[in-house]
Length: 439
Image (spheres, rainbow, N blue to C red):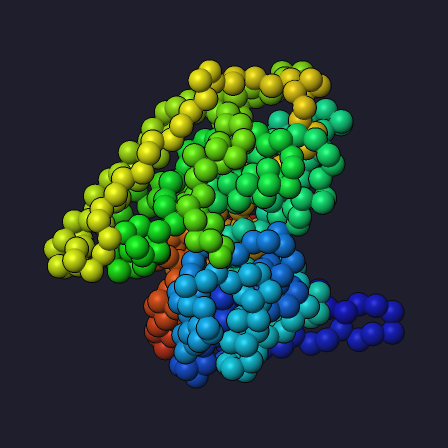
């Protein structure tokens, strides 16, 4: 909010055409297109450029996409290792370099407290003053708040808990066994790192997407790009809400370029159990659906590889690629583990890798459905002059990747510019929205 400390006169609101909230890859890509269109704007960033990559990821994490895929409008990776995978400091440097090249109007260290309708647009109140604007672009990311099941509150005090956002390195954890809950990309990588560090790891597995790191001599991301799967549009999918909820694929970036899947983990001693479904006193309860989840993931992998092989065949690429292959089905324990007593099972720490959700507590605009999800159509939010970027499968399957920000930002900037050119329906914003807010 405005500075109200004794002896300080409140700073008057500043005016700008567009406020972009967030200076990660999505916000910076939007800044590129807004600048090219001559639209005055500012980026409000709670920390620094690339803040989440620097402060909310574990130390050994690398991107799941190869370096050649790291591109933003007007900038591509030009380093010596196009097939490698960026570390988190390298990602931050890439984004900072891009912001400098753009001369992006970033207001760092600025936390947005609220966004609400006002005459002619919106009021954006921050801890460093107030902005008035005609349009707002939300680019604050999809991975702000860890999703942790309610039963976490009932775990015994003797068991430590932390989320994937809080985890930095194995040295944080007390000696003893670890239960990693969640088997998407994060859960698999953390289970692997902790097992290698000497912890006995149990991995709770639910629905997951299995992918090889490489297929027929090419990185799987090459296939998804070349075959047009990453470019699949949101309005061409039968159930877009289901597609947006899919877990991130089981991939890891690293120098070895090796496939990290449940078979690789179990071969190294990680114990696989089903989805965590309950807690009775000190006993964790696991679903008996481990085999079903693994069979479904194996089946979908096979179908994807069939699709990729057919695509390569129709384009005459079979002679340039290694022979098609299929991967062994997921190996399952001989007897499923349906329960684990925390007082006797050797579990000292529970690490929640159960996903994230956006944090929109500051958005005082009636644009949420009954489940609290932001109502939007491909990033055009259900309110005049309000847009969102950087969410999974926002406009394309690649939307949440760094290289996916370009196309989405360009199209949404075009929509925004056209809306402004039509007059932006300025006089209707406050009337249409504040009544719904009861203000």
